[in-house]
Length: 475
Ligand code: GLN
Image (tube, rainbow, N blue to C red):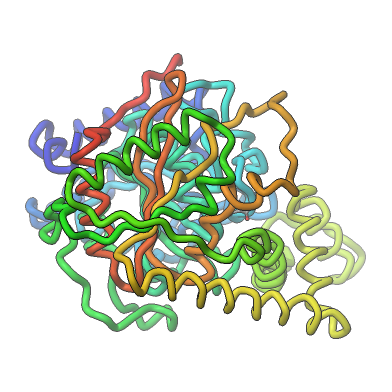
């Protein structure tokens, strides 16, 4: 169901009521929500909104990193368990102005750090297609809600692949637009040079409609772009003829799963048959293998700095000590789980004066080389494409152990961080299924070529017919 058909079906109060009931009904199975929001005030405010507004009376969910005045925003952490937002994020304001009714906050890995949603203070989110599997992370709750049909759109954030990976694992569309396209004011940061706001939807048209609502310059976010916002939905033509599509060989060559390879190659054939100009592009393999370690150094260093304000002195859950110093230490020790503590140690270590040159600055130089390599490849292309993951969503517990130094893990499972290094727009859409579990394909385009990216994704979606998928949850 698209935003459009949903709007034609029920009145706002009924639509919102259905969504809230579904979210409650699925909560024991999916564990996707952290907090519910009473929609009454928002429904009443609709009297001031034009009924033709794109989200008029449409229920949506926010990742639990997005502030909304007078609601609980915990970042799926323990330390902000009691935090009530004193203001709206810019995207929250824009959604409200477009008529959206925000029904709650969706679970994520704590402060967006992780790829499993297992670090959320409220526990893991389950995949709507198979409850023993993860829905990915960090925006796992948002993805699960959209895939289960609870809401047609949920906000996510993406610092490494946190929208695009969960979208693949749950059979939906996940859009991370160009860095600077959507304001991040009021969104709890992870790593500021890599953080993006984006969305999950069940089709490309809704992603385009959402981007049109959210995009634009915001003086409260100095990284937001002044470039004009385009009419993304109107620009969807879906004609693949003449589109220059580069297959990222490093990724496809590193994947061992034959189903993923076969389905991907079959899609590539179809693209050529549609008149797309398909070529193979190979990036520097050593740089591809360096993506993840480089990401960890930059992301954790920035996270360490960003989260230094979580001292529990002014806000947050406090464990009182003899003085401020001790209160801070006790509160932070109690408030962060093992993964965050590890990441703060890595981040601080990389920022030590004696390590800065050999770790932090080196990582920034590697990042620059990666972006130059990607930019050169894209100068001849409209998009580069590859499977979004080497396989289906992993089991939450007891899956095969991953070799984290293998080319498959370093490249196929982590290459999408290139989109964060570069800030280039990147989208995941469904590619197919393996044993009833979704597989995704990822497309990345040049900076601010979001409209073209969406158009090509729309063309592929039309070709595969894989849209508006709704998981049957065994609740
Ligand atoms: N998996 C990555 C991490 O653990 C991505 C997180 C993200 O994009 N927020 O940091």
